[in-house]
Length: 150
Image (cartoon, rainbow, N blue to C red):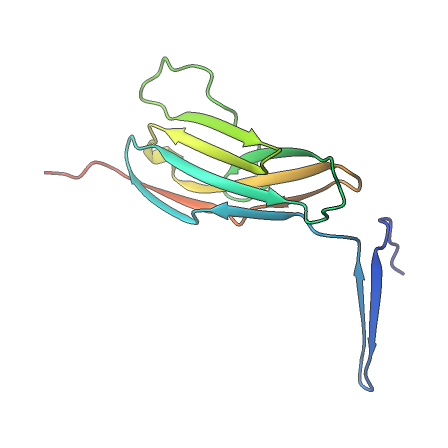
């Protein structure tokens, strides 16, 4: 037995002599696009990763969205936090800019180090209108190359 808790927007059935196909939709899905997918930089470089999100239901005039950036290995990791101190010049600096009204978020990493290499994910949560939902971007792989030996 299957229970549907969300409001159902449409149900479509297709009958065929060999099978029965049922499609249930609960409205438009949250769309999340993240790029670039692959980033190769040198040590101490600056990296920008863009996340664009949209809720295709144009009848909704007001939304509340939260965006989190996560690192390795999946989108279930704790969220990255912006750097609050610049005292350690050997450490990368994290900045996050999100504009809900323009539906984008940018993760900026300054002074990247070898340990910054890995996968970065944009995790978008649509809080309002209900039902709440979330979706992760496909990820951006960051590769950091050390200094070349002379």
